Image (cartoon, rainbow, N blue to C red; front, side, top):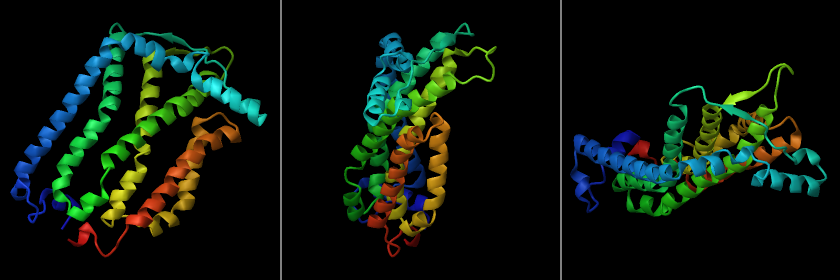
Length: 283
Protein backbone atom coordinates (compact mmCIF):
# COMPACT_ATOMS: atom_id res chain seq x y z
CA UNK A 1 0.00 0.00 0.00
CA UNK A 2 1.32 3.42 -0.88
CA UNK A 3 2.25 6.00 1.74
CA UNK A 4 -0.49 8.37 0.57
CA UNK A 5 -3.07 5.62 0.79
CA UNK A 6 -1.87 4.76 4.26
CA UNK A 7 -2.52 8.33 5.38
CA UNK A 8 -5.97 8.43 3.86
CA UNK A 9 -7.07 4.99 5.10
CA UNK A 10 -6.61 5.69 8.75
CA UNK A 11 -6.06 3.02 11.40
CA UNK A 12 -9.42 1.27 11.92
CA UNK A 13 -8.30 -0.21 15.22
CA UNK A 14 -7.99 3.21 16.80
CA UNK A 15 -10.98 4.59 18.64
CA UNK A 16 -11.29 7.50 16.26
CA UNK A 17 -14.45 8.47 14.39
CA UNK A 18 -12.26 9.49 11.44
CA UNK A 19 -11.08 5.91 11.03
CA UNK A 20 -14.07 4.94 8.86
CA UNK A 21 -13.99 8.06 6.69
CA UNK A 22 -13.87 7.67 2.92
CA UNK A 23 -11.59 9.35 0.41
CA UNK A 24 -13.89 12.34 -0.19
CA UNK A 25 -14.43 12.75 3.54
CA UNK A 26 -10.67 12.97 4.02
CA UNK A 27 -10.44 15.59 1.30
CA UNK A 28 -13.16 17.58 3.03
CA UNK A 29 -11.29 17.32 6.31
CA UNK A 30 -8.07 18.42 4.60
CA UNK A 31 -9.91 21.37 3.04
CA UNK A 32 -10.94 22.65 6.46
CA UNK A 33 -7.42 22.25 7.81
CA UNK A 34 -6.17 24.36 4.89
CA UNK A 35 -8.91 26.95 5.39
CA UNK A 36 -8.07 27.32 9.08
CA UNK A 37 -4.36 27.61 8.27
CA UNK A 38 -4.97 30.30 5.64
CA UNK A 39 -7.27 32.12 8.06
CA UNK A 40 -4.47 32.19 10.65
CA UNK A 41 -2.06 33.64 8.06
CA UNK A 42 -4.59 36.31 7.04
CA UNK A 43 -5.30 37.30 10.66
CA UNK A 44 -1.56 37.56 11.39
CA UNK A 45 -1.08 39.54 8.16
CA UNK A 46 -3.79 42.03 9.18
CA UNK A 47 -2.03 42.56 12.52
CA UNK A 48 1.28 43.10 10.71
CA UNK A 49 -0.31 45.49 8.20
CA UNK A 50 -1.30 47.85 11.03
CA UNK A 51 2.41 48.51 11.66
CA UNK A 52 3.75 47.61 8.22
CA UNK A 53 5.50 50.98 7.66
CA UNK A 54 7.44 50.66 10.92
CA UNK A 55 8.26 47.01 10.26
CA UNK A 56 9.45 47.75 6.73
CA UNK A 57 11.77 50.52 7.92
CA UNK A 58 13.10 48.75 11.02
CA UNK A 59 13.02 45.13 9.90
CA UNK A 60 13.10 44.81 6.11
CA UNK A 61 15.44 47.75 5.48
CA UNK A 62 17.50 47.16 8.65
CA UNK A 63 20.32 45.30 6.80
CA UNK A 64 21.00 48.51 4.85
CA UNK A 65 21.61 50.53 8.04
CA UNK A 66 25.04 51.00 9.57
CA UNK A 67 23.86 50.02 13.07
CA UNK A 68 22.40 46.67 11.97
CA UNK A 69 23.28 44.05 14.59
CA UNK A 70 25.06 41.71 12.19
CA UNK A 71 27.54 44.38 11.06
CA UNK A 72 28.44 45.07 14.69
CA UNK A 73 28.78 41.37 15.53
CA UNK A 74 30.86 40.56 12.46
CA UNK A 75 33.23 43.46 13.12
CA UNK A 76 33.74 42.36 16.73
CA UNK A 77 34.33 38.79 15.56
CA UNK A 78 36.81 40.04 12.98
CA UNK A 79 38.69 42.00 15.64
CA UNK A 80 38.77 38.97 17.92
CA UNK A 81 40.07 36.72 15.12
CA UNK A 82 42.35 39.45 13.74
CA UNK A 83 40.55 39.03 10.43
CA UNK A 84 39.20 42.44 9.31
CA UNK A 85 37.49 40.95 6.25
CA UNK A 86 34.72 39.76 8.59
CA UNK A 87 33.75 43.38 9.13
CA UNK A 88 30.96 44.19 6.68
CA UNK A 89 30.49 47.77 5.60
CA UNK A 90 27.27 49.70 5.46
CA UNK A 91 25.27 48.85 2.38
CA UNK A 92 24.91 51.95 0.23
CA UNK A 93 21.78 51.36 -1.79
CA UNK A 94 19.50 53.75 -3.60
CA UNK A 95 15.95 52.51 -3.96
CA UNK A 96 13.34 53.55 -6.46
CA UNK A 97 9.71 52.72 -7.10
CA UNK A 98 8.77 52.19 -10.75
CA UNK A 99 5.09 51.32 -10.31
CA UNK A 100 2.05 53.36 -9.25
CA UNK A 101 0.88 50.57 -6.95
CA UNK A 102 4.39 49.36 -6.12
CA UNK A 103 4.61 50.49 -2.51
CA UNK A 104 1.12 49.31 -1.62
CA UNK A 105 1.71 45.94 -3.29
CA UNK A 106 4.93 45.42 -1.36
CA UNK A 107 3.23 46.43 1.91
CA UNK A 108 0.65 43.70 1.28
CA UNK A 109 3.38 41.21 0.42
CA UNK A 110 5.37 42.09 3.54
CA UNK A 111 2.25 41.59 5.66
CA UNK A 112 1.53 38.19 4.14
CA UNK A 113 5.14 37.04 4.42
CA UNK A 114 5.47 38.05 8.07
CA UNK A 115 1.98 36.72 8.72
CA UNK A 116 3.00 33.33 7.33
CA UNK A 117 6.13 33.26 9.51
CA UNK A 118 4.12 34.18 12.62
CA UNK A 119 1.41 31.61 11.86
CA UNK A 120 3.82 28.81 10.91
CA UNK A 121 3.45 26.91 14.22
CA UNK A 122 -0.33 26.88 13.80
CA UNK A 123 0.01 25.66 10.19
CA UNK A 124 2.22 22.78 11.33
CA UNK A 125 -0.25 21.99 14.11
CA UNK A 126 -3.10 21.78 11.58
CA UNK A 127 -0.99 19.48 9.41
CA UNK A 128 -0.26 17.31 12.44
CA UNK A 129 -3.98 17.10 13.27
CA UNK A 130 -4.63 15.82 9.75
CA UNK A 131 -2.00 13.07 9.68
CA UNK A 132 -2.19 12.02 13.36
CA UNK A 133 -5.23 9.69 12.98
CA UNK A 134 -3.29 7.70 10.36
CA UNK A 135 -0.48 6.90 12.78
CA UNK A 136 -0.16 4.04 15.21
CA UNK A 137 0.33 4.77 18.94
CA UNK A 138 4.07 4.06 18.75
CA UNK A 139 4.39 6.37 15.72
CA UNK A 140 2.51 9.12 17.53
CA UNK A 141 4.81 8.68 20.52
CA UNK A 142 7.90 8.87 18.29
CA UNK A 143 6.62 12.08 16.67
CA UNK A 144 5.72 13.73 19.97
CA UNK A 145 6.93 17.32 20.06
CA UNK A 146 7.08 17.44 16.27
CA UNK A 147 5.15 20.70 16.06
CA UNK A 148 7.57 22.35 18.47
CA UNK A 149 10.65 21.06 16.65
CA UNK A 150 9.30 22.02 13.22
CA UNK A 151 8.52 25.52 14.43
CA UNK A 152 11.86 25.91 16.20
CA UNK A 153 13.86 24.79 13.18
CA UNK A 154 11.86 27.05 10.86
CA UNK A 155 12.44 30.10 13.07
CA UNK A 156 16.14 29.23 13.39
CA UNK A 157 16.38 29.08 9.60
CA UNK A 158 14.66 32.44 9.23
CA UNK A 159 16.92 34.04 11.86
CA UNK A 160 20.04 32.47 10.33
CA UNK A 161 19.06 33.88 6.95
CA UNK A 162 18.14 37.32 8.30
CA UNK A 163 21.24 37.88 10.42
CA UNK A 164 23.87 36.06 8.34
CA UNK A 165 22.86 35.22 4.77
CA UNK A 166 20.95 38.39 3.96
CA UNK A 167 23.66 40.83 5.17
CA UNK A 168 26.40 38.93 3.34
CA UNK A 169 24.38 38.62 0.15
CA UNK A 170 23.15 42.22 0.08
CA UNK A 171 26.56 43.57 1.02
CA UNK A 172 28.26 41.68 -1.78
CA UNK A 173 25.81 42.27 -4.62
CA UNK A 174 25.11 45.91 -3.71
CA UNK A 175 28.80 46.66 -4.14
CA UNK A 176 29.35 44.49 -7.20
CA UNK A 177 29.72 46.40 -10.47
CA UNK A 178 30.83 45.53 -13.99
CA UNK A 179 31.90 49.10 -14.68
CA UNK A 180 32.37 52.34 -12.76
CA UNK A 181 29.96 53.93 -15.21
CA UNK A 182 27.13 51.75 -13.89
CA UNK A 183 25.42 52.79 -10.67
CA UNK A 184 23.30 50.30 -8.75
CA UNK A 185 19.86 51.85 -8.33
CA UNK A 186 17.70 49.00 -7.14
CA UNK A 187 13.92 48.86 -7.08
CA UNK A 188 12.78 48.38 -3.51
CA UNK A 189 10.42 45.57 -4.48
CA UNK A 190 13.35 43.63 -6.00
CA UNK A 191 15.28 44.11 -2.76
CA UNK A 192 12.33 42.88 -0.72
CA UNK A 193 11.72 39.92 -3.04
CA UNK A 194 15.35 38.84 -2.69
CA UNK A 195 15.16 39.05 1.10
CA UNK A 196 11.80 37.29 1.44
CA UNK A 197 12.89 34.46 -0.84
CA UNK A 198 16.00 33.90 1.26
CA UNK A 199 14.10 34.03 4.57
CA UNK A 200 11.42 31.55 3.55
CA UNK A 201 13.80 29.28 1.63
CA UNK A 202 16.22 28.97 4.53
CA UNK A 203 13.36 28.46 6.98
CA UNK A 204 12.27 25.47 4.90
CA UNK A 205 15.86 24.22 4.43
CA UNK A 206 16.21 24.04 8.21
CA UNK A 207 13.28 21.59 8.20
CA UNK A 208 15.64 19.01 6.69
CA UNK A 209 16.08 17.01 9.94
CA UNK A 210 12.31 16.72 10.34
CA UNK A 211 11.85 15.64 6.72
CA UNK A 212 14.64 13.08 7.11
CA UNK A 213 12.99 11.81 10.29
CA UNK A 214 9.71 10.99 8.54
CA UNK A 215 11.32 9.64 5.36
CA UNK A 216 13.54 7.37 7.42
CA UNK A 217 10.65 6.36 9.64
CA UNK A 218 8.65 5.06 6.69
CA UNK A 219 11.71 3.46 5.10
CA UNK A 220 12.05 5.71 2.06
CA UNK A 221 15.49 6.98 3.11
CA UNK A 222 18.29 5.19 4.90
CA UNK A 223 21.36 6.50 6.77
CA UNK A 224 23.51 4.34 4.51
CA UNK A 225 22.25 6.21 1.44
CA UNK A 226 22.87 9.59 3.07
CA UNK A 227 26.40 8.57 4.02
CA UNK A 228 27.10 7.53 0.42
CA UNK A 229 25.86 10.93 -0.80
CA UNK A 230 27.86 12.84 1.83
CA UNK A 231 30.57 13.94 -0.63
CA UNK A 232 27.97 15.36 -3.02
CA UNK A 233 26.13 17.10 -0.19
CA UNK A 234 29.46 18.56 1.00
CA UNK A 235 30.25 19.91 -2.46
CA UNK A 236 26.76 21.31 -3.11
CA UNK A 237 26.55 23.04 0.28
CA UNK A 238 30.06 24.46 -0.09
CA UNK A 239 29.31 25.86 -3.55
CA UNK A 240 26.05 27.32 -2.25
CA UNK A 241 27.86 28.97 0.66
CA UNK A 242 30.53 30.34 -1.68
CA UNK A 243 27.86 31.74 -3.99
CA UNK A 244 25.97 33.70 -1.34
CA UNK A 245 28.94 35.06 0.63
CA UNK A 246 31.79 37.46 -0.22
CA UNK A 247 34.72 35.77 -1.99
CA UNK A 248 36.81 34.79 1.03
CA UNK A 249 37.19 31.43 2.78
CA UNK A 250 36.25 32.47 6.33
CA UNK A 251 32.96 34.03 5.26
CA UNK A 252 32.13 30.93 3.23
CA UNK A 253 32.88 28.62 6.17
CA UNK A 254 30.81 30.82 8.46
CA UNK A 255 27.75 29.90 6.38
CA UNK A 256 28.81 26.42 5.27
CA UNK A 257 29.38 24.93 8.74
CA UNK A 258 25.78 25.34 10.01
CA UNK A 259 24.33 24.03 6.74
CA UNK A 260 26.58 20.98 6.69
CA UNK A 261 25.86 20.48 10.39
CA UNK A 262 22.20 20.10 9.48
CA UNK A 263 23.09 17.34 7.02
CA UNK A 264 25.14 15.45 9.60
CA UNK A 265 22.33 15.88 12.14
CA UNK A 266 19.93 14.43 9.59
CA UNK A 267 22.16 11.35 9.17
CA UNK A 268 22.19 10.88 12.94
CA UNK A 269 18.40 11.17 13.10
CA UNK A 270 17.97 8.76 10.20
CA UNK A 271 20.19 6.21 11.95
CA UNK A 272 18.08 6.46 15.11
CA UNK A 273 14.66 5.95 13.50
CA UNK A 274 15.33 3.90 10.35
CA UNK A 275 13.99 0.36 10.49
CA UNK A 276 13.78 -1.46 7.14
CA UNK A 277 11.62 -4.18 8.71
CA UNK A 278 8.72 -1.82 9.52
CA UNK A 279 8.04 0.58 6.65
CA UNK A 280 4.81 2.01 5.34
CA UNK A 281 5.64 0.56 1.96
CA UNK A 282 5.17 -2.93 3.38
CA UNK A 283 1.86 -2.22 5.08
